Image 1 (cartoon, rainbow, N blue to C red):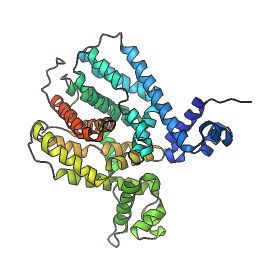
Image 2 (tube, rainbow, N blue to C red):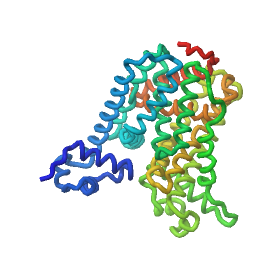
Image 3 (tube, rainbow, N blue to C red):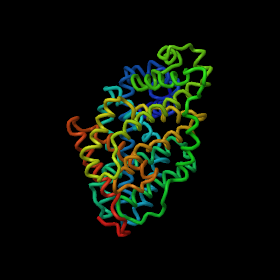
Image 4 (cartoon, helix red, strand yellow):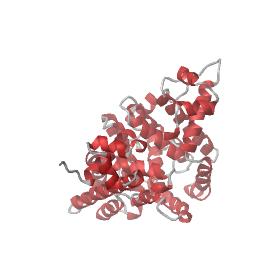
Length: 411
């Protein structure tokens, strides 16, 4: 009789989640995928909830093994500050090829945990993925280890570019631009490329028209459809959004939805633009031109955090839409474009600073990745300590990012 161990079953389950989303993972679907009986899975896991927990834990252990292997590989290297950008880029590329599945599952787990308490312990356990590696790398390079959380956060965001792009050459160029700019600015190394990433800008421009709802002088139905979809995503999550639910929420017929939008994917992409534009508009009201970093950290950023909490699950909804579009070959390029669109608000934040007046969209996206990744790390902390830790590390990031570049790799 053919034998299959739990590890193989969990890998099959991870493939289902990566390809079709967490909702698609059921004992029956896994049995069909693995070519085993449903009764075997009932015996092994008992319930879907146990299967999902085991799947997330298995992916976390694989991720840990990957970073431990990376740490071992570089432990004997003589790392200098000037070699850090190229080395971090090679690590990101290695993660895409060797740890693609576990990196994607980690992202899905963190996104799911924001809405469902049953996943929060596993998300917290994976919150500091790779941190020991980044700390040891900075120690070897004689660079300030206090920047390890910011570096880990940015690297997580950069790797996600590759995760959603199916390793598109343009996306790899954009990922490279992010990593080389971020490491140079954080560690006072010469910045080779100035201005926005051409690849990032190309993705963004190609997607802008796709996320704008169609307009009609005769009816406000398109705007109502998009607004309703956005509200449903924010309140109940992407898995709860269907044509029928959007029509009910908008007070329209199903035929009206299909008349204005050819597919649910197009509605979701327009909803992304709606959610993101609202977040930016509310953030911009807090910004004051020519602020010092200290004022931004002490008075403005806490207000932005508080308003974001009151608005609900905006960050999660954005990630859910990006992940959903990445699963389909037909919409994968749009997924990269949606990710490219993020960072507009962060760019405005940087340009409001006295030190960041000349910041461009690449700088803004780096800051967006830094804040997003730091927020994921903070989720593992007691709730009362999160904001203070976030503000401390955002301050560290900004102060180092806008130091004068000396080319010496000052520590």
